[in-house]
Image (tube, rainbow, N blue to C red; front, top):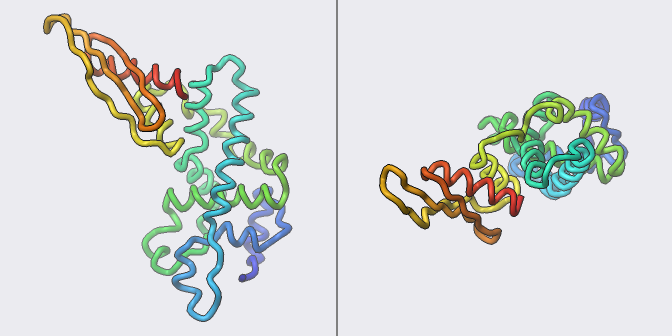
Amino acid sequence: MSALPPETHEWLGTIGFEVKEGSMWLEALTHGSFNSTHTATSQPEADYQRLEFLGDRVLGLSVASWLFRSSDRSKEGQLSQRLNALVSGATCARIARTIGLSDHIRLGKQAREDGGSDSDNILGDVMEALIGASFLDNGFDATRAIILNLWEHELAGDAGKAKHPKSALQEWAAGNRRAMPQYDVIDRSGPDHAARFTVRVSIHRVGEAEGVATSKHEAEKLAAAEFLEKYG
């Protein structure tokens, strides 16, 4: 395993991360493509995927606990909607850009030439991996404090608030790694000038909900809102 570069160690410190076990942080910054370029004569180096898995959960718990404390009148569905927006890959990528993360990601030559250092997916994943490394190196409380500091602007904003129910449900599905919502008109009654539509929305292996309205669009909106209320 390579050593953590001094400039990267210093950069992590400016953000608030305390580095004790350097190899773990180097792993968090290593993309899988790095090995395709740098391991011709050496052992492959671990990439960030395992730490990303851990960091995703630490980030979720940190933000969820903040939302619980600061939103005492919000319903579960509203909390879930905000949580999914605040911990999304796009939000993690925005935070990563604000701290200059792209300069420190270890990528293979082709991946870097293809713009990997500015990819939302890679930036978001590495941001979560750094959170995972911090949790292992410094514990939950210290890591949560850093997260709340880095996410301060996002937490104070409107992310996840008052979205259209269909958009909110789509974000919920993506954030929870579920299939996209499926909308079906299951009943249409009444004359054309006063039709009533019943729409069912379902997500595979989660559940379903229905909405009834005088237009298909409004029925879909009501069904999505009902789904979030039941399962969000």
